[in-house]
Image (cartoon, rainbow, N blue to C red):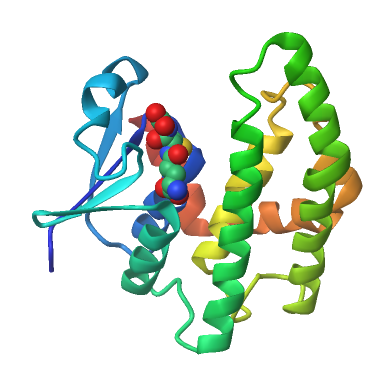
Length: 207
Ligand SMILES: N[C@@H](CCC(=O)N[C@@H](CS)C(=O)NCC(=O)O)C(=O)O
């Protein structure tokens, strides 16, 4: 088995977290390399596309969160082998990327610009994406986004939902997911209550 090193910022969420969770769920050993914000400028140039997460497989460094998610999903049994189910899994993961990028683009704005951008986003694209995630979930059977079982798509959506409901995003109503797409809250609880996910966060707390 190749030696794996996953590099991402030192917090429990964001683009690197689904891969950390998938590797843990699959029982795949990996080095969990966490970069502190202050060390990022010096580290940035060492990454292929000036961004993290990256995954080092022996001496090969690759990037792009969803590519990494697919790879670790295959290693850990959390990625569909059926092409159509894989497509459904991918579609959801890419949609999470789209909407996360739109949210991230508001982070550096001045207070007034941020308020207006986030209010517009919450009523527009964000609400639409949440409704569509809910519709996709329902069409896939209501419990998981693909293959009627936990996949990396579920981990990725759950991290988005946790972020949106955490209250850290000023001017994005904390209850937006609950109001617009209540099934996503149930889905989040299903994912976060998975015994391996519970175990992962218990270990993180104890670390
Ligand atoms: N398309 C890339 C985007 C990666 C990305 O933007 N990562 C952010 C962290 S979530 C980053 O490295 N930000 C620091 C920077 O751009 O300087 C992916 O999906 O991995």
